[in-house]
Length: 389
Ligand code: NAD
Ligand code: MG
Image 1 (cartoon, rainbow, N blue to C red):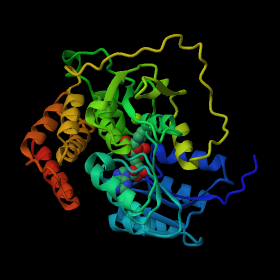
Image 2: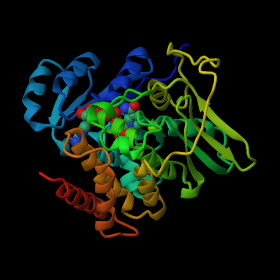
Image 3: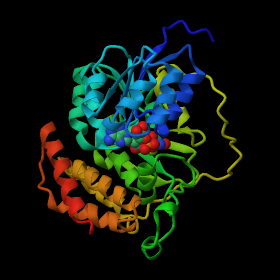
Image 4: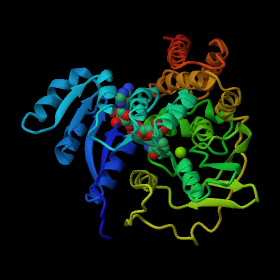
């Protein structure tokens, strides 16, 4: 197919991660559609340098300032400019040299650069769901004010987004978010109490970064996704229902007011939603493996076991109550997952830590951005204080 548009100029924030590297694969396969203008990473300077030398961006940011000199030296004989540190991330997000920012940083750290891009009216392909969990009202309002399109990358939200193309005048009755159930589907607390990090990192269907893999094992990921969906699609909490669908073939569904249900299907491969978000509104041909409708022969759906996976209940509480509670939930969860990954707390301790933090931090009904930042900080400090040394 001859492409008559100029290449879309892409900034990848979090280029060394699972989403970032897959996005670069998509870009490499479509050089006439995309060019790489900005790459950023926190720690992995070797991979960042390798990516930079290959894709020749305008700007590179390494988060960890101790690694600045090494990265700078690697680009001494090129046109690529190198910066370091958290502030540089925001500054580079405000530059004019790109069209679309892929928000692929993990956690709260992704919020500020993403907001900056939105304030500059840039299109954002959003993988970083925590941005909407923490401050969804402010982020979406700024997106409207600045006419900044937000295109979901998360597979469930990409599915819903795809189902909604051509339906702008029609009301959604309900959405069904599908969840694989993670590696511990069907297990009970007496099993989970002994689960260790390496086991929890083995996801049956998806290969992802460490934090989201643990979130998938605890079902917190689905809770964060309910909140993400609320903001992306302007839904009421009770319009969002979660189903466990272990085959991960239907990526989510929309039910309209006439009862009609649309689903988006495909093999579980993040490259598809990433490619869709980068190229939107175009669909781009590719050679990804195709889903064989005869295999597996059954697609199943069941309610999640929220008695066992209580993180999903906590996230639902935050979804319904709103205010700064989702922000507090997210901060406590980031501390909990961090501690679990370092074998400092057990699998079920994560839930207790989040619950206690949600009860501790004062509730704010309509927080300002500053108050969200403060709530995040307070929740982190309190959650960290609960972890025994
Ligand atoms: P990852 O851990 O593999 O990569 C994270 C990236 O962010 C890396 O490039 C890292 O250098 C950078 N980073 C980490 N901490 C940072 C900080 N403090 N400041 C600046 N940069 C930092 O994570 P991932 O799995 O690629 O996930 C990225 C985001 O996409 C998450 O929000 C996740 O929930 C979401 N997401 C991921 C997947 C997936 O399949 N991996 C699917 C759906 C949504
Ligand atoms: Mg998802």
